Image (cartoon, rainbow, N blue to C red; front, top):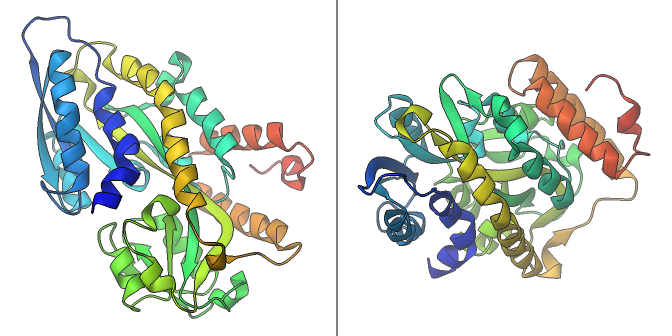
Length: 337
């Protein structure tokens, strides 16, 4: 558990550190609902309590409550029993389709692209994209690329995923579509159970950012015959959502601007976590297959866009950033996205 606290310290504490100073001398009390699969003794909630002291100095009394079920945290925020909530980007999609599209498969292929996307969305001109149905995104915090982990290293090509049991988040329509697309079998999971299902053999495949590899002891599932497929399929993130009418005017923009300097810390933690992965675990894609994987993910995300899962303007933004970095990619000449 101490490893988990270290791995997510900067990723999580940012949600509270971005609270601006209140204009009144009297603290403003607001309820911040924090998803932590371990509960109030867990690492996420513990780190938020550390930040609570800082927030109080800034004039905000954050009354925090822990949730071990992310679905319940989402429900209570929706019911306005919480003024703010910290959710994974997958859950945040239920409130904001644009920022929820940050995890679109293959849309943001690198750390550099993710950095550009985040800086773009933190600017004041992006405000209309960050408010949807009365909910505002007050911060987005990168958690690293998502990779496929397998218990069998011979599963080294997408065609070999057919029939494999994949631990799939039960609320993640995109991942469910992807698993069905490759012919895999969905093993329903939550953010609290997916690692256990993989580690104990109930699932053959799992997907996760590598900051979770050590803390969730996923080597237990990978050893002795498995590995990590060296191809980033998406970008994970945490999002802080607020009911803006419960906070001072301009709170959300100030929070987003104060989050920008924290991006480097987050990316550094991700890079260190990835550097600790033993070389023996990496499964390298066969020559030439990356392009076919890119094309497959594009077809999946376009289909999900047409189904209303992904925001079309978000996908267009991500494509512009991809093509700015790699203008010769064949994807850049495809007018469909």
